[in-house]
Image 1 (cartoon, rainbow, N blue to C red):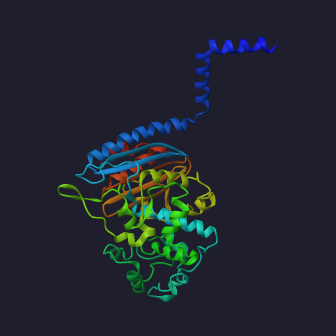
Image 2 (image 1 turned 180 degrees about the horizontal axis):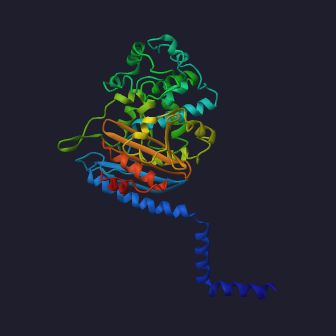
Image 3 (image 1 turned 60 degrees about the vertical axis):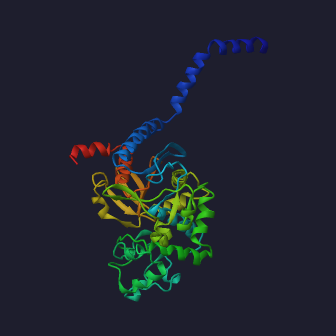
Length: 400
């Protein structure tokens, strides 16, 4: 029977090629999630909005990436690395991440805590004996967890002005003996850079390996983040780096790269390209479990303290039902979804990274200018994918 049946099958395949191709397309449409088509359309819309705002605000250069699950949906670049020079921003151009660095420090610390190298409840003074508040007993209440959740109880941004004066942490630490927390550690929110960066000492004391080396070996290399680094020297060594720009009366002007916040490396000392940030988004959304396990991600994104004042943010206030902070991440509730988010701002650079916990869709944006436009871009995308409409439309309706 085979000789008779086989030619018949071949014949049907030949005369029915068009029908078979149509069937394949139909079946493919059935198995392709509707959201995958939707996010492609949203990515195209975002690209138009991105270029519109970059041109409209005369931003020197920037880049973005949109990730859906383990797939890079879109990666776009704009402008030049340095205003007045020819070098264009590309997918491997290195930017300062500013406070987005906190997501890396918290991830590294959480990995080590889950490996029992230290405990969240450990007293910080066990690792940094020189740390003391005005009331010494309060110093002994400060736990490692409080560093990464900004719940030390101190006035926000304590001694950041010393960082901005290029003073190293060793010169700033004694200053804490002049102040006390406003509340018991763990009970209220106060954003910190200096205290957050003490996790570097905790990591070294617990492992004998530097923070920068830990990041390189445990995160950058396994995630193939080829352009990522820590510190001023590494940033300056890159031949494909973006220059910082500040706004003047004559527009954006390039300025020198300051060391200031590099002294607080866990808080603001990581450098990366937009291609690196694509990998970082995938890892944070759970697609590299050998690097960041589900347990580590869950721990980082478990709220430690509410951040009520963020409910009044000029952009987010109409959309958030709750705001909090985990470990190195802001946690924003919009409808039935949570947005895991962090922004960064340091002399001449802006950065942002956010993803939907429910939909596993994320975005990262990097800019070589101190412009608030990055907040509009990030929020517009987030609000769009959560089904809350368009930020641009909402602003127009309010007459802003």
